[in-house]
Amino acid sequence: MSTILDEIVINRRLEVNQQKELVSLSQLKSATDFNTPRNSLVRKLTASGSSGIIAEFKRRSPSKGVINDRVEPEIVTKGYADAGVSGLSVLTDGRYFGGTVADFISARNSNPLTPLLRKDFMVDEYQLFESRMLNADVILLIAAVLDKEEISRFTAIAHELGMEVLLELHDESEIGKIDSSVDMIGINNRNLKDFKVDMERSIKLLNQLPAQAIKISESGLSDPETVDFLRREGFQGFLMGENFMKTENPALACDDFISRLKH
Image (cartoon, rainbow, N blue to C red; front, side, top):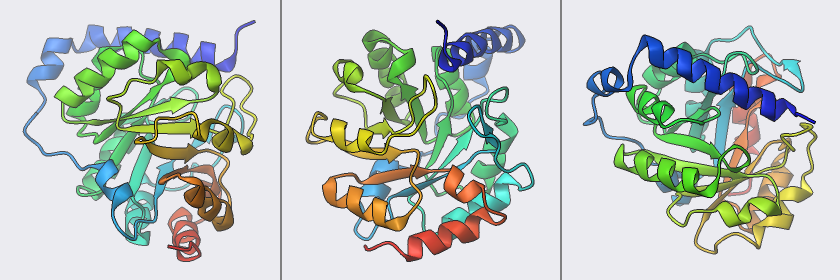
């Protein structure tokens, strides 16, 4: 039986193939300035006094529908940065998450020095070059949609392009796909097959991750106490979107959240 994730991946492959017909890979490469320095999310997450928060701009999701379609990415992400986040994440998948490349560009232009993650379903190396053209600092690779060889190859390409890699896991079956060269490993507390959240997921998988890995907990984080607990357990990053975006003023909600963390 196919899942929402299967559907998203099929759609993303179709969209990438359509995009290739409009702009070839060679055209993409020639339009990219590879000399622009990137911002390191790893450095930010491991810096003394770091909040560890990676705040996400997310208009909607398959499980919740519209979360917030009344705010602008440049205003929200600048507010996140001013609140003291370690990094930013912007969705660029349109059909299922309401994201756009324009959202990403707006966030990039408003926050040139803050590490910015392109949050999308990477299924083709074309998207890596596209991400570099957009001046992304970090890309997301989802273990559930890639095999180990693809993860290794995409990671190598991302590094050649100067970007860092966040590899996202969902369960124990994906541990074997970890490539030792990925920069960060995220544990998504949301099951991508049914989109239900299980906060125990982060703790269950934590001790099975490489000791030296920068570890990030993703999804379902809604209170500072949980983040403080996860930090004590060994997590350095906390990817949060819905908790802030569901409010009228996401940046203010983020600022309040960070102010309540124990650093």
